[in-house]
Image 1 (cartoon, one colour):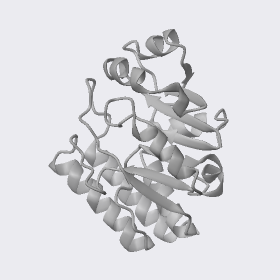
Image 2: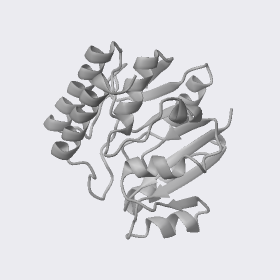
Image 3: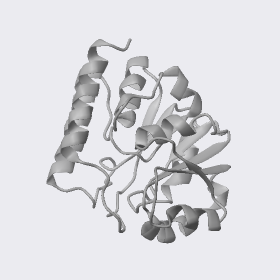
Length: 222
């Protein structure tokens, strides 16, 4: 099965110079950097190092997925954050687990002794709360619904009709996998602290969208 490593970026130059050299070419068949409008040299760094860069037409992580899905040629998509929050060595672990027949595998920050070193009190509470809501309302057993770092089959995008507005693709994916009773798993994956740049996530903004997505999925999607 062909593996595509999908790397969303937005002003990640400082971290990319440290993280990208740690990613081994034998871990993937295709690497796509999808950029949301960087102005700090991220795009130039990527192109100078031979990486394919897709420049988003519309901003936002959800649009990074929506716009890049059609150009991805891999059977398995591994979504990797290059800001230091994702451990490169988990990439082959995710791909290998997927090849055992799973529809989605999550690099969980909260299972098997894994830990987030980037959480603060608010994000730690929110991550666990929304995961608990998904487990309660959709009869699932997730340990981490919100982390970007995960692998899934490309055809899952179409089977689950993914593509919501706002920062909710990850939780939408988890909810709809649970509704369809698909084969999912997680592996432990520490979340180191972010390297440079600024956190793109606003707890209040994201939390509002996530709550709306849960309510919407309870009543609107089969």
